[in-house]
Image (cartoon, rainbow, N blue to C red):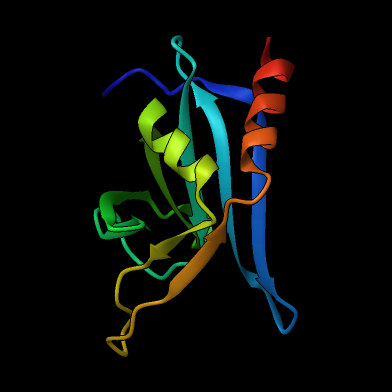
Length: 130
């Protein structure tokens, strides 16, 4: 078993919730992790998947696949490290897409993640961490 992941105390989060189903909310968070304080995008979502299922993040023509890490207590978590180049593209862009694994009906949920204000949020996150 590996060393537990050290998460920073601060995060920037966008929550996507439907008024008729708040328990089905999806949260996209950005946090600094580990001793090197690398940026991570953490997605928490309802049990739409199982451990190891692929979550797809699309930014323009680029597509990154990262696995669902765990589904404890009725929800799932997936995490992707964001390098400086990807962070720059996210901050400069308008939005990205998260594509979730296919459900029992074979359909995939696609979530548009807006990046307006992300640059300022990440700057403030880093200042608060220091």
